[in-house]
Image 1: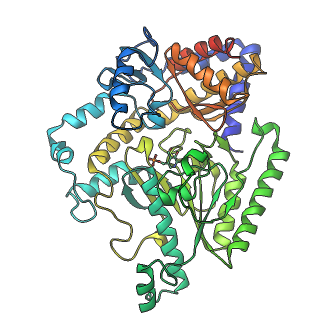
Image 2 (image 1 turned 135 degrees about the vertical axis):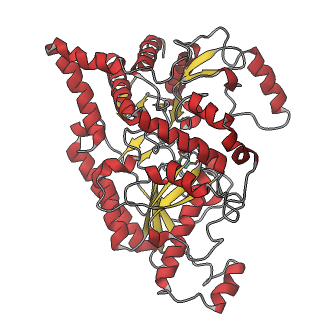
Length: 500
Ligand SMILES: Cc1ncc(COP(=O)(O)O)c(C=O)c1O
């Protein structure tokens, strides 16, 4: 049974227990008594201007003279931000449950990260950004061990750092292509013709291969990543893209445990479609690999069950193609396990797992067979940034020392039951409350009602995100605790009565 079922199940069981067995409150107390994971942060939001306020608006006007500012929401004051609270340029302080598009792992200005930056032993790492692939610093290996190999998905021991999410996706795709071609050549060297033709983008050196992706998937905005991204027209319009296969991501009904038969049929239908597409593309652009998020984020927080991912792995193995799980948004503990795919009980590790966001550095883990034999194939000038690896090493230590995965599970249960309770109070407004760990969300009837709810929450100093067409999503830090959930739940219930 997948943990999304379990967390929803536990939340509802807990509510029932409380009704019939008052001592069940003991669990709740022990949860809220977890010691403070970020001492010294504000105790509540504080809003004294509209947001964006006058300072933000002035800065916005000036910035707009030199670049497009359409996405800017407000200017932040990072110096004054602490833990789960984000300060803005007008002195407002918001409880941040969106955290820089899901990318702050252990809160703003975490003392351990400030100490790492101030540590003289780390100075040269912060000051000199090396071409890591050519001139790695002598402590790189120990840093990689502490920051990345220590938390590698079980069974994967190869790792490559990169700059950002999209850059990691692009290189993960290249690793799948070159592995596929190496297999086709049976280990033989490329021919003279291969070498000549690839320079001018012609076959056989530039083969007509494809990557299979899924409807509503999001993997980034650079050209290769964009080719497998299928969310908003705004991201895609006017940019050339290859005619690669796109399979349907299962459209499941929530709560998942109430619709097991329908959901299983939907997942079987989607798996069949994947098989058909691979077959269909064999003649024209054979599929060299598949790419999928364990839980779709930007596309609307869409879940599929472990059964679906196990089926995909079977298909990948039957066809000898790669399976890349994009954990850019789901990785680093947000689902209560370090990697979301650990909930799937896969028979084998996934072939490649990309990361970024809360991991602070981009990159991907991969199986030996996806390793390039030649240098400079998976490469760029910096291939990441050792300064970020120093910070990540500290983040990983804090996650372990403070048992933050446990905190995510407890906090996530509370978020989910908060959303479920609100949904039962406002059934015409909210649907599909769902979540795994703190990766929680709920749907509104329209984009306009969702956006209105987000705007009303912001007036109360609670900052949340949007995804899909009409979904409100929560992406808090790993140090977000039940006491923060209480603030969210109170504000959420309060604003819902005004959403029209
Ligand atoms: C699942 C997933 N993959 C890839 C990306 C792209 O990452 P970046 O914005 O760092 O390029 C994102 C960004 O939101 C993402 O959510």
